[in-house]
Amino acid sequence: MNLTEITVSRTIPASVSEVFDVWMDPKSPGGPWFGAERLIFNPVVDGLFYFAVQHEGRTWPHYGRFVRIDRPRSVEYTWVSEATKGLESVVAVTFEPQKNQTQVTLRHSGVPDDAMGRQHEEGWTWVLSMLNERFGSGSPAPEKS
Image 1 (cartoon, helix red, strand yellow):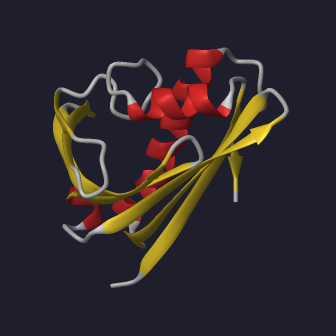
Image 2 (image 1 turned 180 degrees about the vertical axis):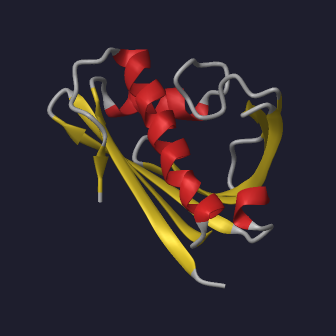
Image 3 (image 1 turned 45 degrees about the vertical axis):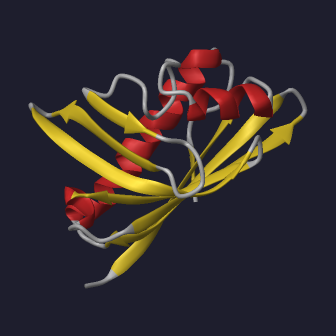
């Protein structure tokens, strides 16, 4: 099976610490874990997560473990879902200061290079747009690389 890497990036109008803290807090609107139908979340190195979200009329479970947490610069975790065909992929998120804003770059590697795997790009772009809305919408459209 061919695997690919997806990278999405967005400039968020808030400080690195503020953006990182929202990303890691499942109770904060705008973060990737917010609004999960079911959530188990232990944000420490080797801590596990499980979350299920509703999308297109069904429940999509995701799970993995935190590999690295370097507040407020980066977080890395494994990611397993139906869309990864049960394979362990890796999500690495960096938070880089840019004046009074934060450049968030998310790289998801080891994703199956098929229609379902590539849908992660749409999902992660949506997550970054929700994060942007959380802090205001004064930044440019999502950037892809």
